[in-house]
Each structure stands twice: as structure tokens, then as C-alpha cells.
Length: 377
Image 1 (spheres, rainbow, N blue to C red):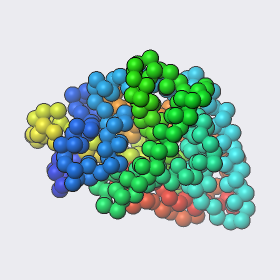
Image 2 (image 1 turned 45 degrees about the vertical axis):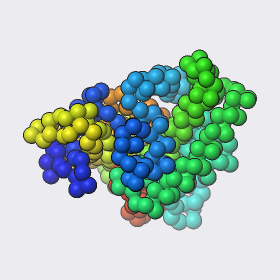
Image 3 (image 1 turned 60 degrees about the vertical axis):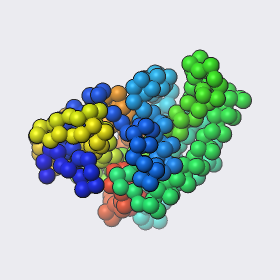
């Protein structure tokens, strides 16, 4: 359709890898922050309570506010942190594959529900030290809340998102107050100590930590679960490559990157023009939104050779974790979860097969495989 395409509802779709990458890395381009959302009017989807709340979280902040909040997190999932999580994540993966194996003795099993949905929730829930009894409740809220981040949510979807946001707000505000009263060696308690040094107003510090906890949680159940299911689906659909990977497991990281390129968990990232700006022969007016179609850009033939071919030995970059100052903070954790699970599956389930095509949620931006039926003859 071209590198830049006018969207029927206004704004533009940016399809080329080069342009998407350039805009993501250019600090002049803005994210749709709270002020931009307010300018769109209360009768638009940007005025929905769920959208307003998401407009206060890190991905919707522009410098200098973004810089301050981002620095408070430090290198959240650095090598030391991931090293401490590795054994726990491996234990979760082994336990979930045990459960999958038990289900498969009776015939088919749903890999998405039994494994993909559970591993990210256990990982982030354990890291935040949330009660495991809350996982199911929180995961379902996350699935509803994501509609406000979709490209064109319906009124009914926004209503679901608004309701879920209210419940998540209540939950994570209570969590912050609990850790305020009984601090420990957990991320929320550490964030409180950091923000107490940054803010003289304790209520402002608590508010900042609530927004961090909400964001870190919401980032896990959706995108990582989709990555895990897509990884299994694509590798099982390419048995020769899977066989090669089983014999060359040092290439697991490259296989995961190709899954991310081939079918990104999130296909759309939005930015706002900082001023009237010309890209190619198209002038984009100040404050106009552009949708970076990263799922499309990851298949740009101008950047990738044979982009429609799934090739785990491909060594190429992708935009699935965004770029620039808004590069995904959870990317190292997602990669670790995918690599750990794949290693366990290669060792324990050599005969795993897909028995039916995956069932996808009716979404545009945020992919979600709701069901992936597998068998092990």
C-alpha cells in the first residue's frame, strides 16, 4: 500500500521499516500523553476513564516527565535480576509442562491456556510478590483492560476496559499501601524507597509507585503470553527447522527473535507529530497521530530478504519491542521466559504436534492466541 497511507479515520499508517525505526528513535516525536488525549475531547475514545489512566503511565509520558520516571526504575531487568529469576522461571516452566503432559495423556490439550497464559503471570506475579490466589483474577482483568490500547475499540470494549481499570487501580493502590506499611525486599518496596527520595510529598510518591506497579503488571500477561504461543505454533508448523534447533540449541535466542519479527505480539505503536513535518512527499500536521505498523514493517522487503519466510537462522533486527526511549523495559524478561520454556519443551516433548489452527482474539493491535490445541502421539 506504500510507505505512508492516510488512515480512513484520520492520521496516517506508517508501513516501512526505515520510517518506523526513524520515528521511534527520534525524540522529537511524541507519545499520546494526557495533554494530547484531553485535547481530543471527552466524547472520543481518548476520554474514556481507562484511556485517561493509561495516559498517566510510563509509555504515555514525554520528556522530561518520562526521563524522571524512567530513571527511577533503573535497569529493571538487568543481568543480576534475571540471574536471580532464572531458577524460578525454569521451575515454573517445568511445572507447567508437567501439567501439560498430564492433560495430553487424555488426548488434546490447550497449550495457550495451560502454559502460555500461566508462565508470564507466575513470573511477574512472583517477582512482584503477589498472592498466587490472585493470578486468575488479575489475568482476566488484564485481558479486558487492553482494549483501551487497541487501534479502534468499540464502545462495549471500552466499557470492559473501564471496568477492569477501576478494579486494577483499586488492587494496585492497596498493594502500594500494604508495602508502605510493611516494606520488604520486593520491587514495590524498593520503588517506594526511591520515590521517597525523589518526592517530599508522600502521596505523590505513592501515586508514582502505583502507576509503575500497574504498568509492569499489565505488560506481562498479554504480550509475553502471545509470544509463547506464537513461538510454539510457528516452530511446530516448521518441523525441519524445529529438528535443526533441537540439535543446535545454542541458536534458541535467534529462533525467538525470528518469532518476534514474523508475528509481533503488538502490531501497532502510535506517535504524535511534534510540529508540521514532511516525510517523503507527505506533510503531517502538528498533533496528528501516526500509527507505526510494526507488524507490517517487520515484513518490509526493503529491509528483509524473503520477509514472508519464517527462518530461525535469520539474523535481523525487528521493531516488536518498540525503540528509542520507549524501548520495552520487559524485553529481557520476555526473552528469558521464551528461551526457558523452549529449552524445556525441546528436552521433554519431542513429539508435540499442533492438532488445530490457533484461535485468535478479535483484535487488531495486540495479538492474542486464545486457544492452541496440541497433541503428543
